[in-house]
Image (cartoon, rainbow, N blue to C red; front, side, top):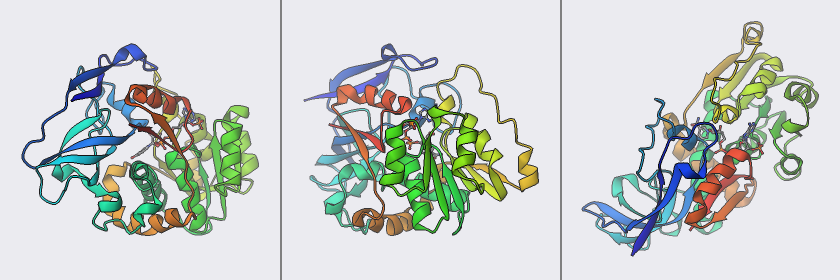
Length: 342
Ligand SMILES: NC(=O)c1ccc[n+]([C@@H]2O[C@H](COP(=O)([O-])OP(=O)(O)OC[C@H]3O[C@@H](n4cnc5c(N)ncnc54)[C@H](OP(=O)(O)O)[C@@H]3O)[C@@H](O)[C@H]2O)c1
């Protein structure tokens, strides 16, 4: 049997180019003691992977050149040398960008219909891909960033950028479900803006490509913003500081607008406003908040299963399209979590 996997050939400068990568055929790995062989069914593509393609020191080690890349994946166990995981089980693990993976059982979490009820959601009510998104890493990012880092409280006015994406769409809806007085989102197309208001229940939304963000935000949030959840950076961050209320909190989750920059982007010009507002700005990494995972699943799982919290996925088919799917996330092709179905 042949396995196909994506290798990084050279470190992209600016926007990644197809020649920086190769889809390579290798033998299917043989699982060792304590490992399971997984046939991946869904692969995750995420903005943070752009950072791992660079050699710069960061919180996650750079991908190695001429080696397979990594990422979240869910698949079916087809061979098991590990206690507690059987053939036919579905597991979430971290060896994506490939069709088959030999995974250490300690790095595999059972999900879906055969899972021990770590997840209190009706397993039939959510597809396997949800464990990469709405009930997975991006969902926990939204939950932890909003509730812990931004110290969200009932009555807050919340602004979230990248609002039609995996993290952003969940931030806005969790805020609404938990009693935000107003939720405002920004996204990069009129179709996405309509979705935010019509389907996700945002109170207001705007297309950041239609005019200056600061002006559009002032119009959408006439009484200012208590919480800004930043997925984007750049002019969005400056606009949010400009609209920040007294005691406002800014959770810096991501800055996708600068990920492909070859020169450092200028910072917000109005940071001094944090003094006057006693505002707080704080970055966070989901990896530091996995203690919230049980609480997250307990609270958000039923909302997902009942439809109180809606989510979309953009599903690209085929390992050969894994790279295009990743580039699509950077371009904004996706609505909700982008996943690759094998
Ligand atoms: N801190 C953490 O632990 C953590 C964990 C997960 C994710 N993140 C960060 O959270 C953010 C969202 O991640 P995600 O997985 O949910 O991705 P996503 O929002 O589903 O997809 C990325 C979206 O970013 C938008 N975008 C691209 N370029 C942009 C630009 N120049 N200006 C404004 N928007 C732009 C695109 O939507 P439009 O059509 O709206 O432009 C695109 O759909 C990213 O910054 C990511 O790095 C952080």
